[in-house]
Amino acid sequence: TQDVMTAREVVLEDPDAVAQWTADFLLEKALSARGVFRIALSGGSTPRKLYALMAEAGYADRFPWSRTEFFYGDDRFVPAESADSNRGMVQSILFDHVPVPTKNIHPMPDRGEPDQAARSYEADLQQAYGGNTLIANKPLFDVVLLGLGENGHTASLFPRQPVLEEKIRWVASCVPDDAPHTRLTLTYPAIASSRHVLFLVTGTSKAGVLGRVRAGDAAEPASHICSDGEVVWIIDRGAAGQAEGK
Ligand code: 6PG
Image (cartoon, rainbow, N blue to C red):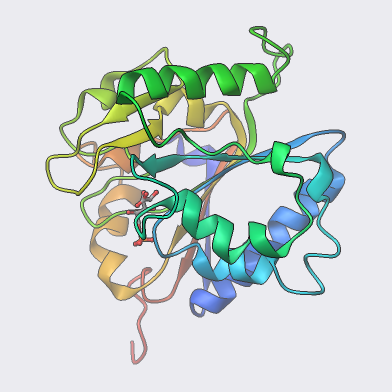
């Protein structure tokens, strides 16, 4: 489970404050990065506010889009136009509204055979790092954004799935037994190869699972997320169990 020395928590008032704090963090890190800034995006509903904020004037005109490479932490194995596609969600909320070069966006494959698709995305990742050699001690990602599902999953690292045991490969397919769609996901080692892992968790419905993960409950897949750099929990009062009136 996470080394508590490299995990920190930021508790904010509400989901808007979580989006704002995260947008400011990403802008500061991207602007201060030398050369290419690489980020893996999360899906689901929580990050929608963040992506909308990043598309707004005042932010979109300051972010270094042309030297940022955008990857996905996971996606459902559905066409981009499907309402369930993380790629489609990010494209419509963010990428359609900002001057990001198309070549800088690396969506996960959404067709073919899942394991083959995982292999090809891994090759895409390696290609983005100048062929098969990783630049000495440079992590894969500057930032990995993650959410937290109520069953303790993050990215598409779902309970009881073989992908939780993957220690070598960076990308794998996953067929959750309690969620729709086959998924492609970054694995634990790929997510760990990062400077900053940012968990965005909001709402009272997440307070239970967040409490278990923050206590290091090994039964929760998200408890095993590590980073070569830091893990930052960016949460609102609802998820922190500090809902109004307490
Ligand atoms: C996905 C996400 C997934 C998500 C959690 C939380 O593809 O669904 O990557 O890991 O972060 O399920 O989802 P919500 O933000 O919708 O609660």
